[in-house]
Length: 387
Image (cartoon, rainbow, N blue to C red; front, side, top):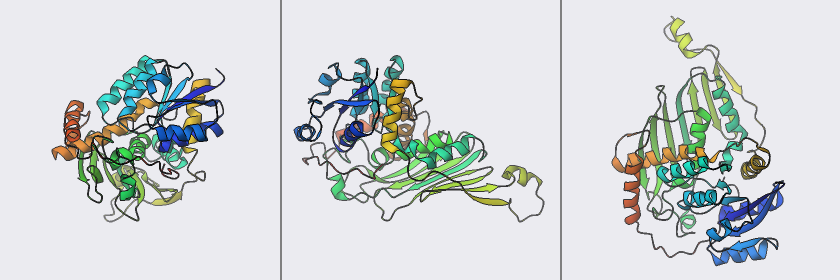
């Protein structure tokens, strides 16, 4: 195979962006087909995309067409596992948009289908291309920070207006989207939280506030506390209702503290690891000698979506290792599912997650959804800069 022939399911906000990137920026990639149930979006494709690209109203026809080798799934969240499974069954490589799905039981079934195939499976975790988080992961995995003791992430710079939520009938509803800030804005941070540290919690206690700042039924404000097997703890705070917001990720270890904020990575490095210093110090008041180090990282945010598309294409053509394997999408989703379950039941949630209990409660939310038949036309928004 000299080129990967791509089909895109869903040419709304992100799908449209991926289509343009495949046409202009990805060596070894060819956009062969697009699919969308919206006549307006297909009209855009026919008018704006080059002639020769096939257009489909239903995904099954495109998946079985024989015209594509790989598919990008850029639909609303519930459809990701279902369409990915259909694509694997059609013998196609699959790249899904984030999140992997809405509930982990469906995502686990998708992962099992991927494992049984010989196809490449990726997820659009484009923030893994960001040199800040790549360097953070390297410092932690190498042991430079020592054993992780605490993680704190305040990510409140996801401000969204009411008009944003009104731009699509599926947005911010349990029936259409399956969640709010955790499921739509924070999948990248939830992924990076566990990817950079190499840690998944053993239990979660979360407080979610539903429609606190907006006329929506899902959460737009969350504070979650987690505990890890090694005794470390973590805090995750997020909202779409604060302006201006903050994005500060802090990881404390036995050899110091690393902070990612404002495009910088700062390492407060202890000359002697805290446990070693504490065991030998006899002076009462005091603390270990600490050096403040500005860690050099390349400028910019990395290749982002283009980087994931290029890596995925090269994985198919040349066997390049995936930066964001699709199977890893379940980790961040497990965190958000656990936070919802904790808030709904007003209690701690142990991991592994009780997937059946979560799905049972989610289905109740869907059944009670006030916006199932929300009559609002979908509006394609400019996603530049939204990650």
